[in-house]
Image (cartoon, rainbow, N blue to C red):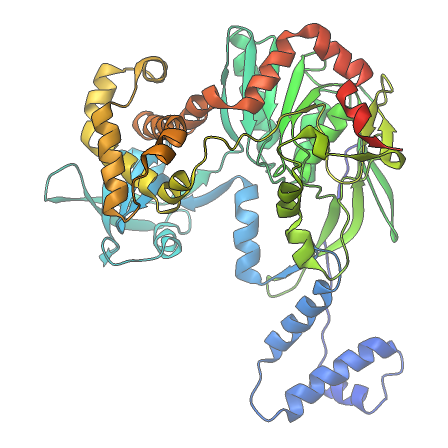
Length: 548
């Protein structure tokens, strides 16, 4: 049975008359602590020397209480709530473009296929200068303010004026806003003649459908094994993860359960009607994989259904129940913890009220060497668990520890690389390059596959790239540049491919050629003896790291 959390609404309506009664001690049924809080709010609102915003006072009180609890209980006002939920709903209303900013100018990277901008003829490379007669180019307008002008209710119209190529004349387009899909599957393609690859960036309302479409397409191309990439996936909707798990597990197998002091155990189990229960699978995770990504990878690991590759995940395993208020604001209150089928608590340890230490956990892991060397990791024997099919050892204590550890390689990342990326030199160079060479690239490399196989930046291109950095006061350092040259070339090539072929997966395809996590995933899929041994016996390298 699928797990469902019902949202509920708490309404507290108190008139000033009632507040006065509370102060007078006449409301005997109100608990003493609440009575104290109401008295304080009433006193401030009635007696404070300056004017106060009563609504803000209440918000401050809610925020203050939540700050003393766990790191994930939170409050958002009406606008913040809408902005937070929009990416997970799977769509928003707008004009349907992806864009970049260069020197205060909006460059269209690509139009959403079938979207409003594509329908009226806007092209990748166009520069939007005015929106409804408001100049947005060269005026240092914030990206968020530009987005506000482009987005709007479905059916409303917006007029944009566009500069195309070197022509000084502006082209006017009248665009009718429409629903724009937001995708969870960033990329899906065949790595070779039998291995499919699917990258999922978040768990939203349409993630399951998108994944199934991707797997169906890859199956038609001959897929016999698959890699699911959940690196940097911060999670999202619980039910999306449960629906995904159902496709790979047998009937009745536990997917996840939740439990809290005042929330009884609640389980989600597989229906057994999944289409890919026998498909060999590797899951890629890293330290930024969290929440629903941990539920999916934890369930697959606990049932010996997939080999997990990468680094220990974030460790976000607290269940928040949304409590909506009449003004559109919302409190997300932690009511339970997530547990994997073997009983591992996904949530990493924390101290109530100390959010700073919690937020610095990833930095602490880096300082301890956890990302770079297996020997820096230690498991407590008390946190040893066993999988449910083959009873191999796995470990709890926060997050999902992969079956194969892949260290982070920082040898190619210099301070010169950091400065060139931080100042936006890479993106600016790509925008200029594509603006000048788009037609030639499409002519010389008709398909993304052609581009991937044959395109390379020339020495002259690299010289212009370095000069672009110096123009923006990034001093050239030959030794540091040579250290990072391959990273620069791969990143720039990937961004050019994304822009020219209007394909959001193009960048992933290019940079994956130099992805050590993906290399490790492919290697274990093709070493079937090791793949089977990991699922039956676990990783023997981990045994020497256990603290008795």
